Length: 437
Image 1 (cartoon, rainbow, N blue to C red):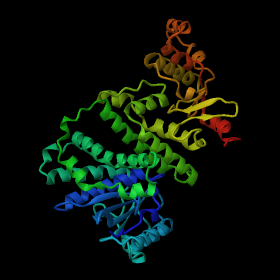
Image 2 (cartoon, one colour):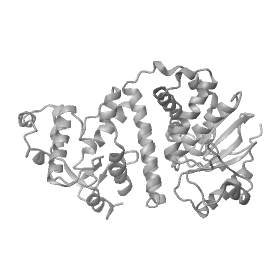
Image 3 (cartoon, rainbow, N blue to C red):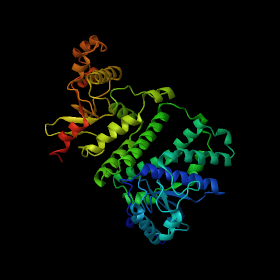
Image 4 (cartoon, rainbow, N blue to C red):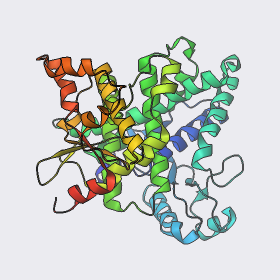
């Protein structure tokens, strides 16, 4: 058997997967478009971040053979010069890995050059079109995916399922195929005697018929329970992360980009109970509940909290002390953990957030994350949560008195919260980023 391409010769960026949320959504859009346009997708597979950001491949003698190559750039710039090197890279990829059809470049921003001008300068590639437009904004892509999914349902004789609620469920299931594939690649890479990232990304492809099978399955019986909403929350967190990276691209250097991607891989690798616990720890001021749609709407991730506080903290502070964990220790052995708290530093805000944290601890018995001494906020400083909360009559002091005299290990979780301080991001950066590895 002749091996057409050696995967060890291909550098996969799956360990950092630059912009993978947008890339994954673009890949899903293209897959759905193929299902709509073709009579059959038998023998077609989606390959992620190997031959290119993604590729449609077929197998020849059990080896992947590219049909189309796709490079995706989720950046804000509209200048041709910002993309010139990437255009040339895609052309080189097409030379190195000849494909049956075309090599496509996907733009998230309208370019100063026309589609025809770019293709004239780079004859070996095509600019991908979305409903006749040579680019697709990040905030418009999800709606376009839903349109393609709806068209698929119509083609498959299932148009009666095509309503907003069902399309939301359907797209979640389709997108999870892609996210789970990347998590699988990492799991294989980190397992004993596991494959390299390059080899895993090259061979861990997804049959397009798996997407089609989801489309033809009636998902109305899927129970919108805690497991469903956890899956949706992961998708939300991924989307917030992508938006944060795009909005902050001028401030995120290569080292910070790798660090943030490693965090994202960690979030996506958590099982459901672990992810639920993680959410509660970064939101100690609110009881995380999402067993119903209303609870999901009322108590889940808030985009401003995640982007303004949590992701800003992860970006602003050095890499964590341990791989696949979040937390830092300063030169005085004090421990820190990030949160999504964005309240101001006013007297009222300090008291209110301290009350919310203590009441949440009383209600949920949440464990102190990373055995923290400090919880990092966007801009609020509280030297002692318990002392600040005690200034108000809204804390049931009799409950606190009982806890003070209790020997229960469960109550110990709450008494530890009483010892915690809140510290704003700028002060945390000074303590953690200076004179630390």
